[in-house]
Figure 1 (tube, helix red, strand yellow):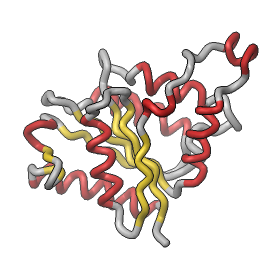
Figure 2: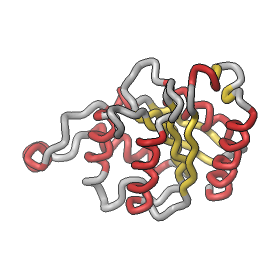
Figure 3: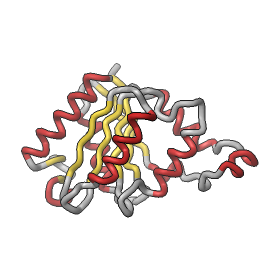
Figure 4: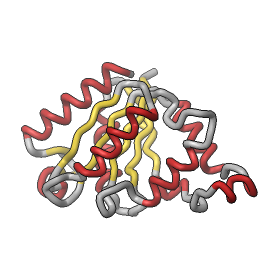
Length: 178
């Protein structure tokens, strides 16, 4: 039985290009079983301490946490909304951070981002890389794919040879850690 990978796009867009990239990445991990999640399946009330005190942590947060616990590695591809995480992802992360003292269960992570533009979500990816190194001590690697519509297609994945080589470098670090 292969390594278990949980992957998702950090976006609630039904046509998320970041979910497409996360799915592609998860399916490239050798000898693995990919569990592709949709952030829409984990929509919860906006986090607030008063809400947590009144109602506790939502069951959907516990469900997502169980997916993370069951995984050997985590792949997240970040959508960039106004230079930061999507509100949907930030809310999920806020709820997860309130559980059991560790958000990502010290699992190896491959952090990705893409966008239709030339920076490929680099700003949000930088935020994630800098934040997650304090939230998770396990190995992390990262990759940003610029111009998604030019450099990716559903049949082939990443089509630009130089970008594919950079992706494979990040993937190899992740694979070595799981």
